[in-house]
Image (tube, rainbow, N blue to C red; front, side):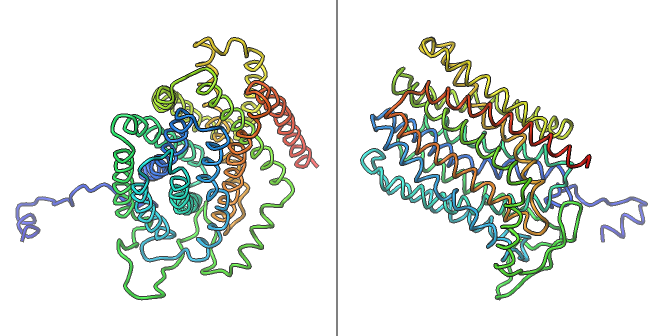
Length: 452
């Protein structure tokens, strides 16, 4: 009736303006979606690794006990490589290519978060606290693997630098909410209030994920019958044609070939050790500030979640486009060299650490190490992934990176029993300098190979 009336009046009726919620069709939605998905992953990580970690140190627990807790929570991320082939094996769904894994794991992660209400005293029930966080980390790591696989399939190569920066920025912002925000709730409202706040935030993000489609033809709800599949997405510049339901044997064989390829293996080892070295000194210095210099755990959690996170976000948002212009390999060499100079110089200033300005400057700079390394590392790792197993290979890289950071947390607890944070820092500075030299030689070898 309205259409007929409009024709008589010579009016044109336009459909209502509804924002596109199809990932394939909208660049802005891709930026927003991968940003908030990593915010969601960062909240529980910040709660466990910052708020609870600092709280346990302040309550007088030993470095060994706190390190063991951190290792327990982080261990599921170490075996993340298992999820990649399973996700690639069972990737097709009418609700979206791998989206079923994301929504399912988000729902279970919400339930796992609510299970933290079983803990009444985090210090006395440290084993139960670690066990519940462990279960949550299992499903969070599956979600992370699924999101990474979707990113490689749906993000064009020209957008990868910015998307990776936004993903890392989202993780930092989520970590700030989980670290600073939930730390203050923990101290003023209690552990139960912090857990309920986290659970409600995770539920809100899960609902948002439900309404985002990957392709225009995707359904919001799955069909109520077994075996429903939809075709793989059409090949694009960033996604090779995918074999529907490939065998696990084929996936693992291709994954092994991709990981052990000579050039990519050498480059990945440099990235892997860079993360481990930065994490090792970061953990040691963090413990030294609270345990030896008497810094407040609430102050550190709040500082990291506000000013430090704000600075990290600026670095990432500026660095993302910079990576696309200068190249990830060149930026990686500069970052490694800069971190080496900082670690060597700062640890020669150990007597001045008690000066607030010096200690604060060192803390802020070491917090920037991880995002600086990630700016160059993530696009490089994506470029090393082989066609049709991008999700599996990238997830394996991330699992091994997580293994190094978890190992650094555990190793830090033992090293601080026999040496000091400054000695650990000097050794880390020397190792970082060797990695910078190795990255430079790797680049020379690649140029010579191309010239030949």
